[in-house]
Length: 59
Image 1 (tube, rainbow, N blue to C red):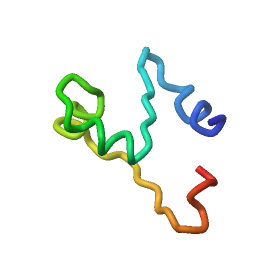
Image 2: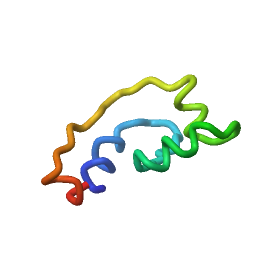
Image 3: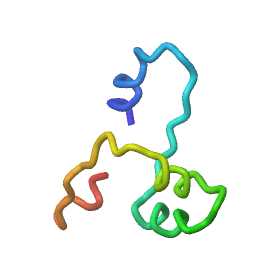
Image 4: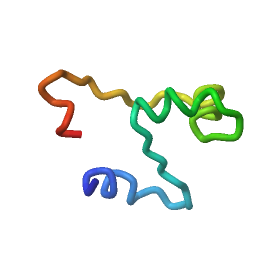
């Protein structure tokens, strides 16, 4: 979390960071009014980390 904090620190305006697991995103994107729904319809993927079966709990 500290890496993310330092990466976002230079941004000079207010914003929200919302973190969802893959399971939460897939579940919620079906429901109108949820953040996941808006993201699935209008969002832009900025970064996707590669996952491996050995590294799932390290996130």
